[in-house]
Image 1 (cartoon, rainbow, N blue to C red):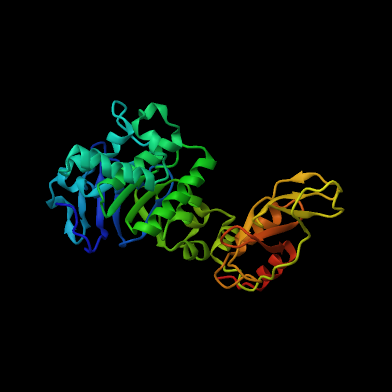
Image 2 (cartoon, rainbow, N blue to C red):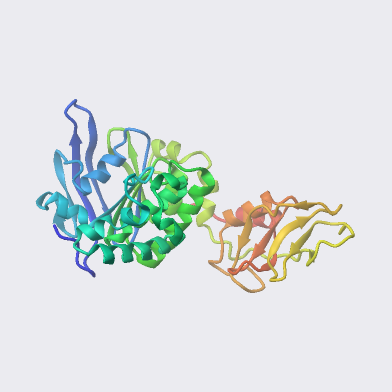
Length: 368
């Protein structure tokens, strides 16, 4: 199967896919779901539930023993495996880079296999490295000279370099520290907003699945599909006890990330534009020259971290769709002043969000 033509229906369909291994282990049992074009479909579940097995049936690294997998309406079993894989980006845990090739040549691998000259392939690779936020000076380094987060960015760049409409991502961020992991998730969401790929994303982390997935498939041990739904629906209406337990008892808090805070008022907070010699006498927001908050000043003049910052639309109040109750509650509860700092899309100070106001709005939010 050649790479899909631009404008095609880049859809992945699992049709009653089953996989039984030689030792009798059931990897997948009658898996049926559709990963829709231009969306991130997250596969999540405990160890042994068939997440990676299902992913690898798409590029024929695993052959199903029953059912079929279709890409763009065509059974992948009818495709030449090598040609099929040239049309599918693939990102794995710990990047899987070739240690004997420099970064630029790692990323240029697929374009060269697709027939580009080495010069053209390196030019495309350089552009993709810039797109994923890597300094061009890193292009000539060896993989071992990069941090874990940088290696994962190179892995994503390599998957994008072939301009494949479909990406398979197998726990790509699980081997990095939590801070870098959030940065990589942000980068993926930014890239997806620009590129609109069809992405199948495997993770064991329910928070990651909910944050990244347009729809989330929860799998049970033995490769059975427990529930397949958008994140908000999954959190509000778990299909059964297994899904409820897997999503976690704090699913109500997670669901706040999908509840708009349109009616939440902003309150005025004391502000300063310099630290000043005199203690402010009350909790005060320190602003820089661009009106961006940089710290809290305590009543005695001590400086404290802002905590989480709540981002709203520009304006005097929080507009509908501007933010969520989870973001507002995080900002209020993480603040040393018991009042979160609100900023606009450019990071400029807009006011504060009080914990009591968030909780009052939460009480009016109907349980769904």
